[in-house]
Figure 1 (cartoon, rainbow, N blue to C red):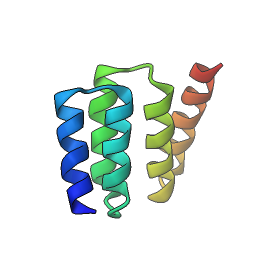
Figure 2 (spheres, rainbow, N blue to C red):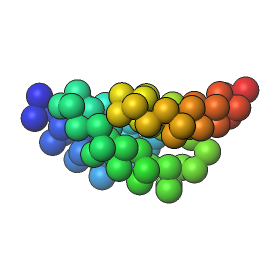
Figure 3 (cartoon, one colour):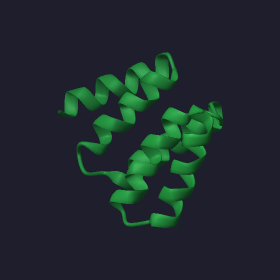
Figure 4 (cartoon, rainbow, N blue to C red):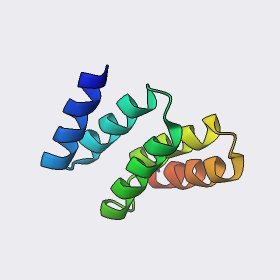
Length: 83
């Protein structure tokens, strides 16, 4: 799995698309590193501030950390953007 993290990070740095950033965050999250995953999504949201996908994934990580207010805020914003 560590190889997957290295590969995903390289892809996100080489071509920082929403999908590549999302995948990088997911594989880091699979390692149980929720705060690091949030930091990845934070950086992605600086580049793509209206990405419902990145917000939705960050909301999930906040939920895992029991930071419910942040999770709900991200989830509601993502839902509005998806509409």
